[in-house]
View 1: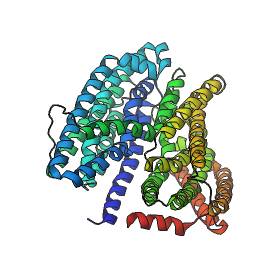
View 2: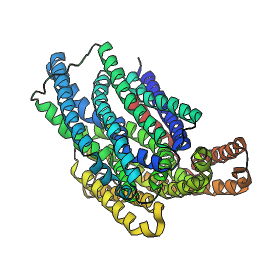
View 3: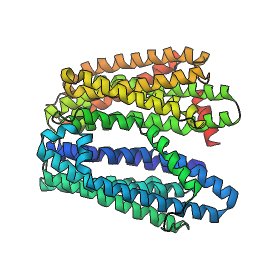
View 4: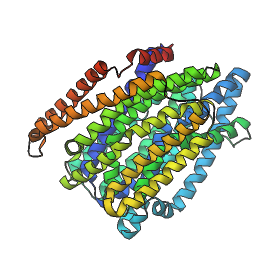
Amino acid sequence: MSLARKYTLVGSATLASRLTGFLRDILIAAVLGSSAVADAYIAAFLLPNLFRRVLSEGAFNAAFIPIYARRKAEAGEESVAAFTEHALSSLVAVVFLALIVAELLMPQVIGLLTPGFRDAPEKFAQAVIFGRIAFVFVAAIIVVALLASILNAMGRYGLVAVAPLILNFMLIGVLIALIALGWRGDYRAGLALVITVLVAGLVQLFFVAHGLRRAGAPVRLGWPQPDRDVKKLLMLMLPGLMLAGAGHFNMVVAAQLSSALPSAVSWLYYADRIFQLPLGFVAAAIGTVLLPEVARSFREGNTAAAEAAGNRALEFGLLLVLPAAVSLSILADPIVDIIYRRGAFSAADSVATAEVLRAIAIGLPGFVLVQVLLPPYLAREHFGLPLAAALAGIIANIAVTIALLSRLGAVAAPIGVAVSAFVNAAILALGLKRERLFGLDATARSVLPRVIASAAVTGGVTYGLAVLLGPLLASDQAIVVRIAALGIICASGVAVHGLAAHWLGAADLAAIKTLIVKRTA
C-alpha cells in the first residue's frame, strides 16, 4: 500500500471517529442532559477519557516505536518478539495492580476529582459506581495502546485507526435504544451507558489482539522479566503522557474546581466537545508535519530549517484557529442550541453551555502555540522545561478559576483553562528564545499581522450575518431552517476568510505545500 493510500485510510478513519463521536455526544446530551446522573457519568469518565485521548494522540507510539525499530535493526525478529512479550507482561502487571487500587479507592478518587459532589450524596454514590466500572475500560485501552503500537511499528495502520469506531457505534446503538425506551436523565440510562463503554473496551482489546495474530505477530503473556528497554519504555511514557495530556489535565482540573456547581461538569463537557473540533484538526495537522520536520532538521544540525518550519506552522495554525475562535465566540448560542437542545437538554442548559464555550474559545490560539513550540524540545528529548511549563499552566488554571469562581460561576473554569494554555506557551517560547532555537523570522513578522487582519475581517462578516439572519436562528424556527441559516453563516465565513487571507497575503500556501510534500516523500 502506498503512503498516500495509508494516509487516506488513517485520515478517513480518524474523520469517521470524530464524526461518530460527535453524534454520540449529541445523543448523550439528549438522554442525560445536565442532570445529576449526567454529572456522575461525566465525572466517572474524567480519567478514562484523559487516558483515551492522550493514548489516541500517540503518546505510547512516541515511546514504543523507536525502541522497537532499534531492537529490530540491531538484533532481528527474535529480539523484537522478546521485547514485545516482556513489555506486554510488565504493562499488564502494572495495569492490574493499578486497577485493584483504583477499585478499592474509587470513593477517594471521585472525591478528589469532584470534591463538590460530596454535598450531593446520591450523585457521589452514582459516580463511584460508574467510576468502578469505567476503570476496567481504562485497563483495557492501555493494553490496546501497546498492541496498537506493535501494529503501527509493523506498518499495519488501518485496523488501529478503525478500532476507536467500535466504542462510538456501540454507544450510538445503546443511546438510540434508550431514547426509544424513554429512559432519559435517570440512573438506569447512565448505568447502561457505562456498562456499554466497558464492553466496548473489551471488544476493542479482542479486535486489536486478533488483528495482531492475523498479522503474524501473536504476543504471549508471561511473567514480567527484567529488560532494560522495557524499563526505558515505561520511563519514557511518563513525560510523553504528561506533555500530550497537558490540555486534557487542565480540563480535569476545571471539572474538579467547578464540581460544586450543579450541572457545571456537564456544561463543561459538552462545550469541550465542540471546542475540540477545530483544535483537534489543527493539532493533528501540525503534529503530523512539524515534529518529523523539526526532528530531521536537528539531526542534520540545521537549526535554521527547524526554526523556519516552526514559523510556517505558527502561521498555518493561527490562520485556522483565530477565525475559529472568533466565530465560536459569536455563534456559540446558535451552535450549542442547534446541536444539543433536545430531550433532557433544556434551553437553560443551552445558554449555560454556550457561555462556557465562548469562554474556552479564547484559549484556542494558546493551545496551538503550545503545539508549535513543543517539537523543538521533543525532537531533542528535552522534557524538563516542557513539564515545568505544563505544571505552571495547571497552577495558573487553579489560581484563575478560584479567583473568578464566586463571581462568574461555571464560566470561571474555562477561563482558567484558556489562561493555562497561554502560560504554558509563554514559558516554552521563553525557553526556546534563551536557547536561540525559535523566533519570528522576517516572513512571520510580515505574515502574522495579515493573519490577524484576515481573522478580523472574517469575524466582522460572521457577526454581520449573525445579526442579519438572527430571526432564522431563533429557537421557534423549524430545525431545518436554523441549520440552513447557521450553515450559510459558516460557509460564508470560510469563503470570506479564504479570500481575505489571499488578498492580504496571509496564507503562505506554497510553504505549507512544501512541508506536506517533504513529509510525504
